[in-house]
Length: 287
Image (cartoon, rainbow, N blue to C red; front, side, top):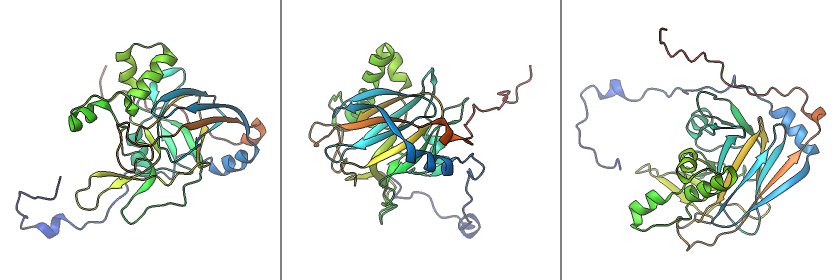
């Protein structure tokens, strides 16, 4: 925590502080298909759905050009989402760079970028029934890319107990089942998530990560457009609405639904799909 300071203020303090912020990664030049996608989504047809049981995870496949939704069913419930390029598990969602481009929480029009060296948009958010929430007086908002995922290692550190249904473990088990991976290989590719529906922020005093009860209710959903073939893995967090605690069997938890939607190609005319980064990967090295 940063409440206590141990060093003295420098004599040239005024020269060191007070400068204006500069956005590190302006995103104006990132391809923007939102206008086309908002029109296309008016013509969606549901082709599949998957139910995610409470305190567990499931996988799902979304083909490029299709949409998918994560929906609240029976009560307020947070979900932890991993995304992979379906044919290459090395290419996976990169929450850190997505955060750098779009901010701590993402919503309509924002893209979910993949890891290096691929670094392209895996999916674009096309609808969000919770976008009315914005940011509250504590700086909290929904759908964050700042939290990592609840995990058994941090739970053990804090509580001293073993708990096997944290989102990290749920995602690991689902990948083992879907891809027939061994436990170690599956766990290594589980990555930082999009915390769907989770209401989070950083405290004003200590700047610690906080959570509040999610405003999500049955019927609310977050919708995405797949820009490549995707393997999704979604965990229904053991924290329920994350209003009190997670990584335990105490919170009331509910299922989530993933639905897959198709649209006729004519409604996607003009879409500019993201491409794998064209950086030559020399890294300044001389052959």
